[in-house]
Length: 227
Image 1 (cartoon, rainbow, N blue to C red):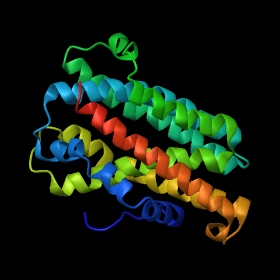
Image 2: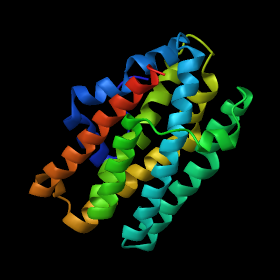
Image 3: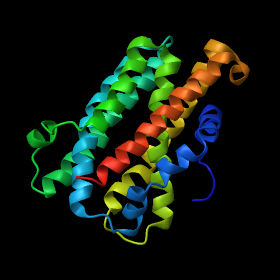
Image 4: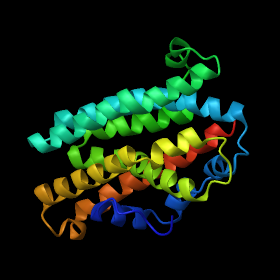
């Protein structure tokens, strides 16, 4: 996949503003080793267990977006994302770990690594103390970043070792989720701030939130390389 994915105007601006941090996230060594199949299975399963715990908190953060939403459309989009995370994405983790002999109960009881805790609490805090826009800015890097990574790896992967994981995020359903969240972000910004939202002082704060969440994603990948 060449170039940036089209997940909406605001995401494109935030992605560009994050600069090298975004590249560090989407082309991290962990990602590249998923692509060529050289990632040790132990490291992958360690990551999956931590990511399952992450998704528990991430789902709760998206549930906060339902609370913060101001329109039926915003609440509907946020609730659909919660459902996708719980019904589909977490199911992927459960299935792969079950094949490795890790039960769902063991998965749910996985001790949370500090890198995981730092990221999830940052996102939840954006929801507890911030507004709808602050929360979306913190949530967006995970949603869209995985979509971008999945689409690129689907084209570039030289190994089928992690094809199930790649296909989940490259798949039509997940890619549509990325476009839906991008549209949600675009609409929420225009609704609250107007068409020229990127010229207002608040835009800088939102971009900083996006960039910090991206930095925490980099740390999450690095954690995956150190079981």
